[in-house]
Length: 235
Image (cartoon, rainbow, N blue to C red; front, side, top):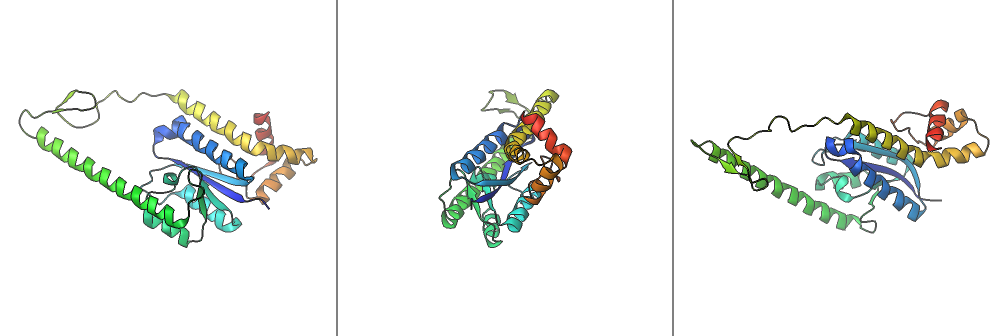
């Protein structure tokens, strides 16, 4: 029996989520891993959320499905899961087995060490950032105080985001949505096509996918029309 996986992909910012670039690379890594190991992908969950937060609803759904089906949680990179040691060890105590595509042979001990190092690095970066901002604020608070940006070389007299730097690109959002739908159809279509070749109706295929705990791109249950749309998109 082939190994069963539930994939989880995550990006940290809304910009990464709307572009689809970060998610696309993770989807590719997951697909390559499953193909190389002859595994079966039950479902994929994705979200845009900071790794600092552990209250991630899509990750919770992925873990619940792993518990229900006995599947392994598959992630493209270890840091996409969490950089918090307590969270990762808690996941292991919960009994959810997971594997990272970038470190497939790592055991629980090595993973905990790497997560601990990542957590320490994150805390050090945060401390340096806060100290740097405090220093700049103190400098600007003085009469005639100013600061020269190391990145741009510009002179700064006050902190804050200048107006006019946000550029609206709704076309990128639409393209990302379409790309996501195409990628999802490409993953589900082979299974649906195989069932269709067996003579099953769209409704029967939907029932079979629901029995396998496979969700639609929006995380809902399958209908005959949803199956037809996926097959049409893949074609």
